Length: 429
Image (tube, rainbow, N blue to C red; front, side, top):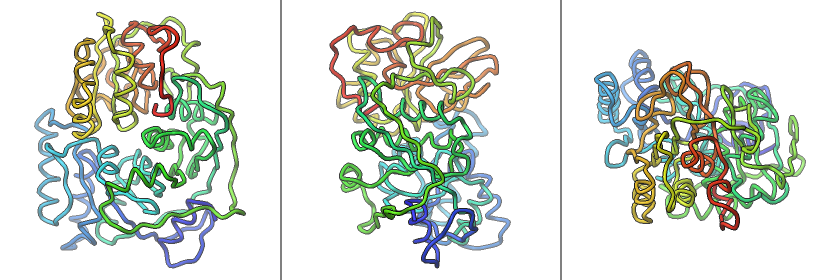
């Protein structure tokens, strides 16, 4: 069996599973947010049960519209809070607020070998720590909160091998955009993407979270990384329990396909409107003026992402035509950025810094686009109307390209605004 199959089989009463089979799977963690949890709560009430299967294995995080942007969002958050108090469920808000897919691994709530489901498509982010993590509908989440298991079809697995050494300013965001550009938004439809290769081994955990996060943009059921020393060091000080199992694929594991890339010649990527699959090298984008830059989200809102952006902004100024919005992914990321004087760098450059929130990523608040406006964003989707007006445009990029574009006032690469000879740790992008 491959990595996905090993994890799923361990959560059933069977010794092995094969793609296409329907199985009942025990879950280790259930996650939902302020958009999806209210629906799940209403469906849970209809079941007529008086308790959840295990309150320690359920987490609710209001993050899409917090701090509450209007009365409706406030009522959604209140509904979640009251439900969590009633059933003893873990709830994160205000002091421990953050974007769920940044906050939950940061808190050590997801560990290697876990099966995690969430009422959010980017739940696949947790595959970076060697977990099988996937998004599901709110009604599925409601049933899982009551029973502790889910019914699903075993996905096939596509193995991706990234050979070579990453060039300067190129990292996880560029690898996943390049991959989606190659295979398309349905290239891994209902498959598990298993990431491997020497370039992957060199990626930081933040870079791996970025890649796993966007597996869904290729249509994948999950995106998984092997557990190595970097993974173990990441979880060592965070783990909320002292037991977990690390799974490795068998030597003779079967795969639906094996795709290899030589990353040596990959440049920083930009996905043009209106699909993540429209990925091109930043040098081929052309002269496109922009109105806004967003650096943050569950894709690139971690500390390494902000460090990289700060490298570009240091002693530079945001173009007077551009709004630049920096959104740390959690309170801890915000605190790290404060301690490292990154926030000061952003503000002196002319950017604004928000409290942790999904905010503009889904066109919620803190950066909604008007008709005709263009935005370079480190988020994960650039569909029509994703960030506001259906007549606006979103261009996806890594943090250094986003920062460089904010300074240039148009889509630009970092070398263009910094010049040559700038030292960079590209493995964290």
